[in-house]
Length: 105
Image 1 (cartoon, rainbow, N blue to C red):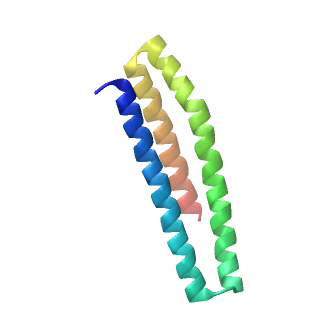
Image 2 (image 1 turned 180 degrees about the vertical axis):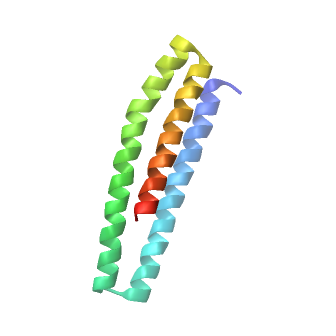
């Protein structure tokens, strides 16, 4: 399988995941509307959900735009072991910081 075929399969997989995610979100919204209607409870849920999605989207985009070029440069300059070491360090920092947030909450 060539690189372009692998890339096309990866893109297709991501598209399928995105469409599935949107469909499940629509089902969630329909269930929320049928159970709670338009009330202060549903408005509070949607507001808190939107804030959470905004924060996670900002963090995800920040990681994607900074981490991928840095990892590519490190892999070219220092090799795959240095790239794996940096990735492990970043994952450990994220797990520790997430655990702290969960404990505080």
